[in-house]
Image 1 (cartoon, rainbow, N blue to C red):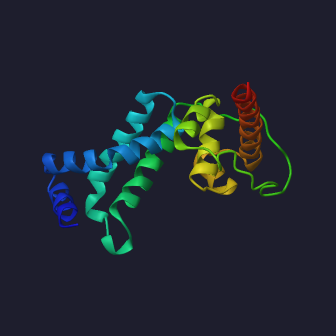
Image 2 (image 1 turned 60 degrees about the vertical axis):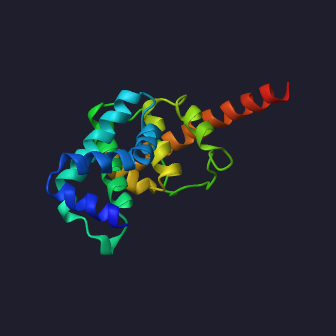
Length: 181
C-alpha cells in the first residue's frame, strides 16, 4: 500500500517513472475493460491511453477516502472508451423499440460464460450493439444511463439489447450443436 501511495505522489509531481509504474500496474484490468468495447486492439489501446492521460492530469483530485484508486481510474478509462465510441460515429439509431417498460427480461447472455468466451462472442456483434451490450450487461448501466451517455433514445438502446440477446442466443445454440457432435 505504501508503494501505491508513493507512485501516486510521484504522479502528482508529473514524475514519468511513477506514471509508467501506475500505467503498468493498471494496464491488464483497464485494457480488458477497453476490449469489452472494441474488438480492435488499436481502438482499445487508444481509449486506454486517453483515459490514463486523464488519470494523470486529474490525479490531484483523487481522494483515497472516497474509494480505491483502481476504481477511480476504471471510471475515467470507461468514460474515455465511451467518448471514443461516440467519436467513431458507430453509434447511430438503426431501429427503435417503442414502449414504456424499462426492461422486460433480466436475462444476461453472459451469466454462464468465462471471460475469454465473452470476448469472443462480443467480437461477433456489430460495434453499436456491442457497446450497448457491454454497458448494460457487463458494466451494469441502466437503459436510461446508457441513453444519456450515448445520446440515443431509450427505444434504440432497447433495440440494441434485444438484438444482442437474439444474436448471442443464435451463436450459443450453434456452439452447443457443434459441441455435441
